Amino acid sequence: MRGIPSCQTKMVMGYKCGEDILFTEEDLEEVKRRIANDFAFIGLTEESKATYELFQAMFGVQHLPSPLPYAMMYRKNSASSIELVGNLTRQLRNLGWTDPFDESLYEEAQRIFYSRCVLYNV
Image (tube, rainbow, N blue to C red; front, side, top):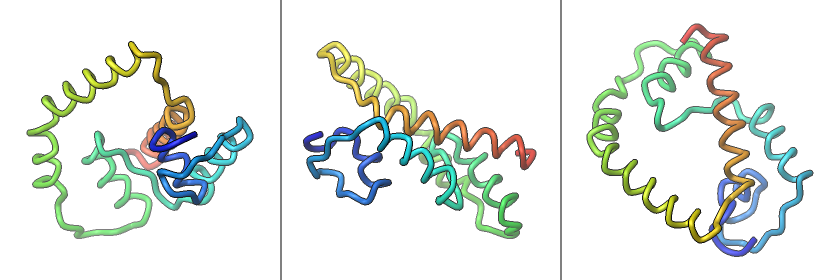
């Protein structure tokens, strides 16, 4: 794929975001395997508080600086950011654009994150 589409998938596979790569379903399965088995931690920006708590629970880390000032900055801008991203995404989808590799990768990251939250009582 040319340019920015599948940027996250490319980076997990060791490529630069802008490289021209043609991915296969086998590549997608490898990306999912890597984030499930090779990444020590997965957090989600939109779940900053749970990400912070999960990190503490998984690694037994105490007394980390509170992420709340940073989370609050993110949340203050989140409504307009979400609206902007939503509008852009709708426009791209209306033009027929999709990013199945990054979308599938993100769904797997969410699955891992939320299952670890349950496992660690976060």
